[in-house]
Length: 133
Length: 245
Figure: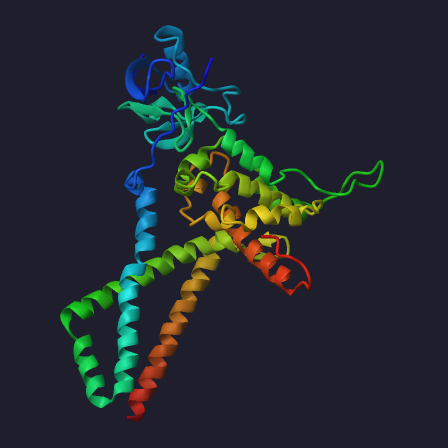
């Protein structure tokens, strides 16, 4: 008897089929607002090199509502991506102390503690600069 | 006894050019599994319905099906959890042979490609190959795979690129690479380093969600990325040797 296997198609909309796939695509899509943020940074560097007038123009551009909104979205997207990354981290790099593996919640908490430390350090650094002006 | 509706995807290669749906009504109680329901359909309603099964206790890995679009073992899924009825389809991403039976030969080829066995010099004659509980703990979780293929149905990368070694095969390679008795890692790395190896994975992570044995293949694959990177760096510093890519 001859065989006639049917190969089901894999449509471009495959990721709409299940919440797990939609979540994955959302995680990957966080790169889009981050691209805009990187563009903003590069524009700032370029403006800085062009002199004061250009730098002031860049600052005015930054304060437009749509730029603020997109950069706000980029912040939310990076926090969301960080959250997914931190949760996956213990799966990828389980840390062992002797024969025991560190519990996942401890590793996730430690990473958030790291984020908090960086934010506090930046806040202190920028606050310090203000105080000298 | 209450009854419920089962919508079954049929594909009969002699008559059909594409799958279609057929509805069945089955009786069930709290202990009726999807596999029990299929047996009821085959015995009482349509003897041509085809599916795979063997142990009925989530050990053999034969009865994987899509239940409402989610890969599950038929014997470990119960009708009581689907009071509004359910749909049954063959495992996604595999060629369908007939009804719920898929052709798993590609998966099996990927499994054998990673040399899933101990590659080691024999233990001293007459003595067991000793391993401490800590050494066992390193790989034990990854050795619980029953080769049911649910993770391949959950993996969109396997669906898009069938040459991708896939979750179970890479998890098994990782299992042997982590085994203190094994010396075959260098023979497996060429497969794992390739584009169809660990780097074909984008960490969707759904494979670990559907795994009925808690193997967490996504962890194995992504730990494999670290192993592959280290292997690349080590090969790079070795004088006069080709990388194992």
